[in-house]
Image 1 (cartoon, rainbow, N blue to C red):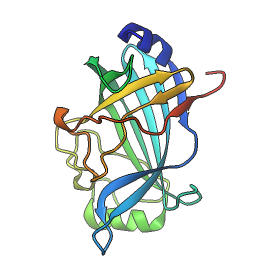
Image 2 (cartoon, rainbow, N blue to C red):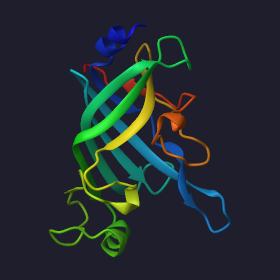
Image 3 (tube, rainbow, N blue to C red):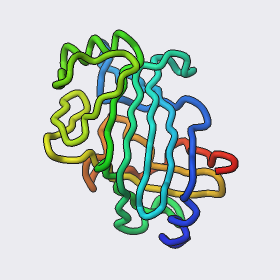
Image 4 (tube, rainbow, N blue to C red):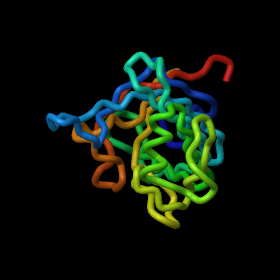
Length: 191
């Protein structure tokens, strides 16, 4: 697929098949990496614009939601990625929205200890924008949008992004761009 083929085929809505697991940068007391459970709902809106909702779970079956993150912004396309025929490098820039909603009281309490924002305390179910703000828990820097150096590969009704590094590193630079595919999302029927 060419870049233009990918962009045309990508338009629409995509969702996780089931809750997914990722290595996180946080470690357990024994030094092993703590798992991070999530599910994704992604929309490619055309004109290089995207929307992504990430739901973070406390458990591998997705029964207890901890947090919800909503990102909106733009995708840059720096060129082909060698992981698979037709794969493209994709730079996701959340320059329109980055909203965090605590969905569990324990997470809201933690945010109130380590990440206070003007406008009052964090409250379960109430989203707050961290767009362009310094937000240490997520590594956000004042005045800079969140950016990830990722990849996109389409195979029919399946959308693959890059697999997270097993040591928990983020995709925060070209050198950290993924080199493997992760579990795909599936096109939402009728979308």
